[in-house]
Image (cartoon, rainbow, N blue to C red; front, side, top):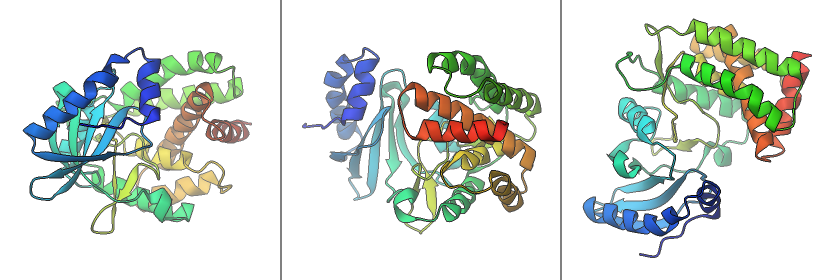
Length: 295
């Protein structure tokens, strides 16, 4: 089998010292194609942490086969997709987490390429998130919003130093305060399944004209965790982020203060991380906005 591995995936694997995976993954794809009766097509570009290729089932169903790179655990994603059952997220068709492989419904173009108006994007992202959210209990093996806030709080100061202090100390302190509040606010009784990273490139058009998410992180958290990523989106839009937050709260019935906290968290963490890996101008845009809001 001739398998094209995109350059971004190659760089991710090489940087982690797992070059042998590049030689092994064609055989993994070949074995899955035989076991699941798939016809394998070309690879998709754009991903960093997984090889994604077109696949067609024996009955003609269009699908995608996703293979996680070493160090990428796809089990939380598989759990989230199973729970969503095709509502708000791509439908999971088959899985083999031992080989870090997921077979998924094939969706259409990203929202980014189809919808030009950012405000409309935000509303459509919100609508897809509402379809995804559903109550789940502590017995589900997913990390919580409190876990995420605590992990971010542990990582942010060190990441900020390594990135060369790309925003003000006050901005970091503000984000840490938000993390503390969201950790304390977690409640198992009201937690729902959330995606964890909703944005216009992670929402693809479905056959019914709606949008579904791909790549769910899979969290058991308050809905505001997802809406905060919409507050973080399009940092160069120039709109009033408080007004955007209030609009999302009105649309969903979610507490605007919680949305604002998560928006701050996602903005600062994503901005510092983007600066640390040279993902620009996104990182600088996010942190310029964060510093302005803190000041």
